[in-house]
Length: 348
Image 1 (cartoon, rainbow, N blue to C red):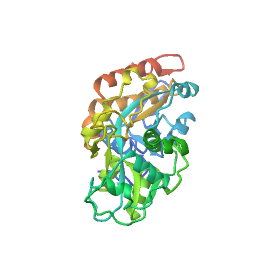
Image 2: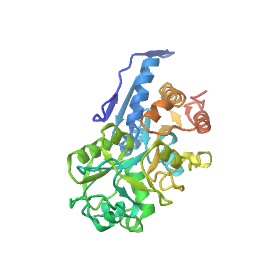
Image 3: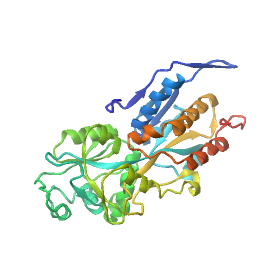
Image 4: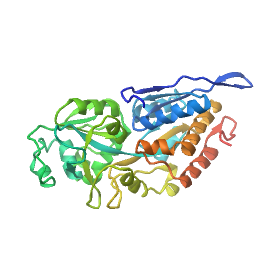
């Protein structure tokens, strides 16, 4: 098992390859999404044991990952917010989805069991707007009959860094609450009206664990690995759901990757009574013209291995692996879009 408290995944490099210009270390460098960190860590551990190739991944948030890949300080960036075609083209980038996952609302309420409290989009938006201030508010009590809700102040916890997790969360709130959409909106970084900010999924999880009465949005693997209490959420079609592989898969099934330009796809508030409402993918960002094509090929080999061999590891952490037909499209996009300085494909 790996430690989720660290924001850096550093696996030392034990192998090197030789090219015509001399020795070339095969370490892979990446930065960005904390959402993908748990499964990236498991993949990297297994991949190094299999190939001897190491990964240095900085789990600094999607905003940081986008900045680092734009600056060419890493081999790849990772973002839970997909970039639109214009932004990709402007910066000479392409993107592809690595894995799909989901966010849950973790709470710190002593005596409350996992999944015992129900929330819906409107109530959640009003909590994050600061309109609902206590856990025994009439709106919460109305959908939680029979639950002894305490007269405890709600402390909102949100991300303090530029975050794709925040993008997914605020995208969802903007879809379910006109008030949220008009007053706050969506993005990797927004002006939250209330609450305290934590850095990374790790930081939010840590605050929720320490502050009685708190609520925070985290990737499900963080809640799972830290044995956190989380809520049910109401689906778009009005069913209260527990976070499970089945409800995540139901939401992921709505993705139309084949017709999504640049794989731009958002999976929040999907149709279907069993679709978990706060679902999303993590996207890997790479330059279309590679200054160091050998590095790029190592990144692609790593994710090709993860697609082909890492599905069960992803499922064990309750992520949804990319379907085989989508993986085929992704690998074709590598061949078509990632070139060396002479226009030759890096992925053959």
